[in-house]
Image (cartoon, rainbow, N blue to C red):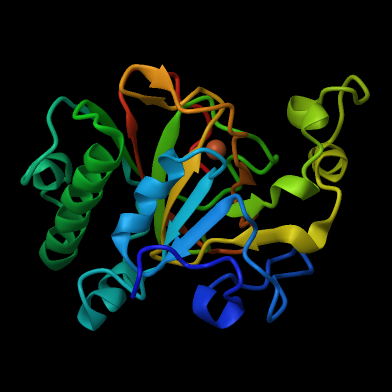
Length: 262
Ligand SMILES: [Fe+2]
């Protein structure tokens, strides 16, 4: 299979762009993939987020660590996991060094290997060896307002619970990001309704998919900004009060105040 998925490919290949909860819509079958998004079942697609005009690259994965690993994630202990570490040179063993010994051994091995895999993929795509790795579990909404990240490029994957919601470029009223242009204390819903012009064009990343998100800082290649590509607008899926817990991993460049890890 080629690295890139042509934009004419439709929902069955996307495989996991699911109906949103509680957003009432999804990509309908035969709906083309937006031109600012690249999707593939190979990891090489992640580097496409470095290209002009692409602000979201999605590597679709059915799981991590094989079929036997899925129940390990499902049985994840409820205690909060909160890892936020800088790694000054990515390589094998980075994940194992970050994860607590108290984590169930089999799950720890799978997660450690995936952290290594994604840190190396990030380094390959961006040329950065100095990275920040965050692994968090949560049962709240966190970044429920649609926003863009103040980073250049970030990888994110969700191991348990629903993935991040993202918005097609043409359905985003960017002038209202951050609540700009609204009343003094707008509600979350008011801000989201102002930003989203078409709620049928919000999509949810599938579980285990790895997404490369372009943020509002310019992506630098060989010392020069790639272009003025718009950042991808996204939010955390609303899960507060549902009993659902998410476990997600973020890999990004070190040195920035990175913003909301939706
Ligand atoms: Fe974010």
